[in-house]
Length: 176
Image (cartoon, rainbow, N blue to C red; front, top):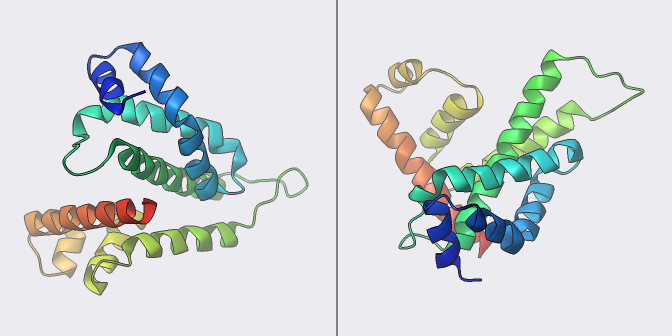
């Protein structure tokens, strides 16, 4: 079915649009989520649902002049899966997992996430990569980062915005 029709239905908040979206793109979304979550199979279904919800909630941000609908869906799927990895690591650090019931090498998982992020950030300058890691991964405050980098807050946010755009463009190129 035509993507324009799916977009039109979703923008009008018609459930039929979501149904068609799921019918047409569930395989693609599932494969991207599966690839990025790897051994975190227990979160796969929830992440896929969140991807479709994110598409539903953010359809007004899709711009056909900047990207194809399919590539936009791929980018959302990848970002959601990476966020799930981060969320899982945070939760696993807070709760104790019994080795005899469920074992995942947390260091290996951290390494995988770090490699994924380095791959995503590779097109940024060294300074921007450091800012992105500190802001998005280490969750340092914008105020602290602005001071550390001798920037005003608005300049820091502009830098982050340009970096996100650059990452989005490169992710789109990689998916093609």
